[in-house]
Length: 101
Image (tube, rainbow, N blue to C red; front, side):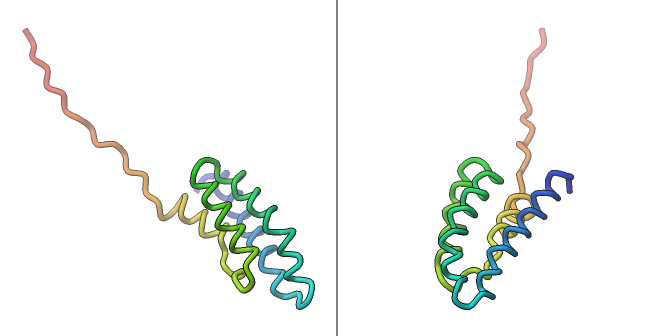
């Protein structure tokens, strides 16, 4: 794992932990989610640019705003999807036949 990837992983764990803290606060927790959900969505799109970051930011927003779903570690799952589970297949080399004269 590269240094950048480790920092991204640790940052994701921290954001997941912050998102889960609201479950522990009985009356104030749901109101904190109203503030945390847009912030978490913006951080997700910053951490993972492109189409997958936009999709993940929408998912993390929904996950944080809906009650009872705060325990899903969406930042960690996105990291695992990006760097562990998704395998980028290298293009297969093509053979080009050349006639010599």
